[in-house]
Length: 177
Image: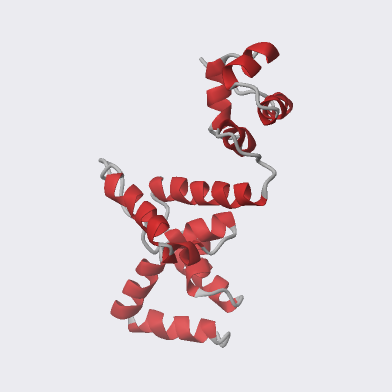
């Protein structure tokens, strides 16, 4: 079973790669098993970027890592509003780019169907309370939904079918309740 390299070990490997060494040669020279290197690259963004031949310290690398994380979280089934909050980005601005929009649609198209025992997350009394508290704090609907653990779509569907919820939501937005 592969073991993760420490951050210091991964950083040492990155330095070798930035000097133009071949990955397998650098790993062998440092005494690292390739299975361990590949396992570490799953969670060590700097190593993964260096393995592509690019400098992880370059400003473009940060954006590439964020986009990759965005797609990974979508593939795990998180809604875009929650992914935006987790990463501290507004991924919807990237969705204006045709290629990235297509990439964002791909995880949903290939994600496995929900299995037995899975059910969509819905509103509970606690989630409703957290959502309204977040709205009262001045957060936009997408952020408040993510804070409560529901999707923005679920919020607006409930708003359409539940007049009391719609009224309470409006009051919370206005910080009147």
